[in-house]
Image 1 (cartoon, helix red, strand yellow):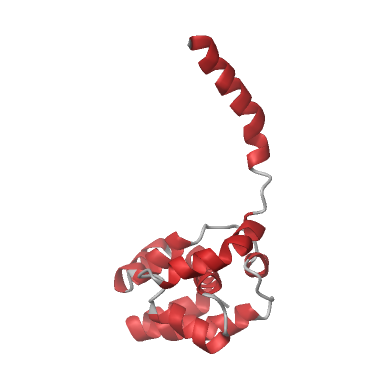
Image 2 (cartoon, rainbow, N blue to C red):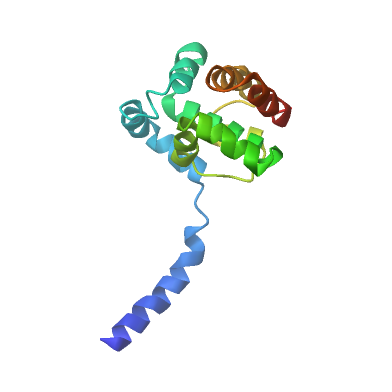
Length: 150
């Protein structure tokens, strides 16, 4: 029993480095039809920001959530932690959006490309995101997020 456990752990260690070689963007695109159907029936999928992006820009719910999460992640990098905490306290759905998409350190255009979105979509998403933030927080918070995304 002990030997089989050691053999299993050893074989797993040989396989594990290759597990990180997956292109999760391609995997997400392949799973998009299933994911979109699931997302559309969740609280994140019914979020006003996600609905607005899908209807106005013609993107899928997965793309809307992933792109929004990427932009919120970018804003978080450039905001004071207390300010970002205040933002997510004012609009708790932001945390749900960010939790629905994996965090990334890649440039925004790369994150959007992994979602099947062209680089210019970053600029098209931003006004929708800022409107969403401004409608749920104070004008000062809207200005902080806008400054972080410039």
